Length: 164
Image (tube, rainbow, N blue to C red; front, side, top):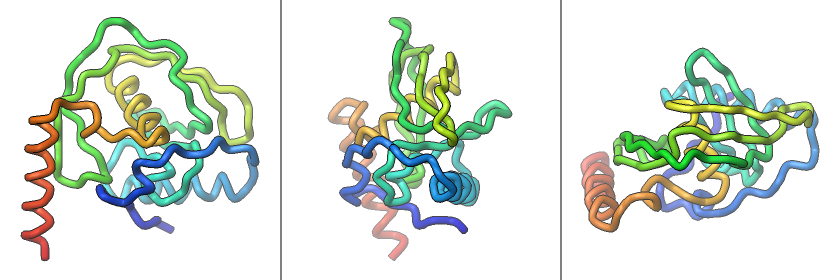
């Protein structure tokens, strides 16, 4: 069952998610519902707070890899950065250029609580950082300069007014 997508302005998106301590069937069901919701909205990643759950878990499907990461942490990040356009399911229709480390090492746990370590670069590294940011209450608009943020918010307001 697809879950309700939370959108910009919902305070849950600016909240830090709590670590997951219980690895059970309910967590596995949440992950499956998150995958369904992500696909329904044509995304490549989805963090739990985007569907109103303040748990440190995200799902992603990138480059033929299907990932569920619980309690993620960026352990290492390259000094080399790359700028690329990013969108966000919680800020529909808005795309902004975000500068991020080109490569990262992410640690966490899988659905049964076993340790997980992912070395990534390119698109996968970007998605891992984007989703981990969500769990820390950070949005792509927090990673751009003031003028870019203003323009994106203006575009979002106009889109919302047109849809009424």
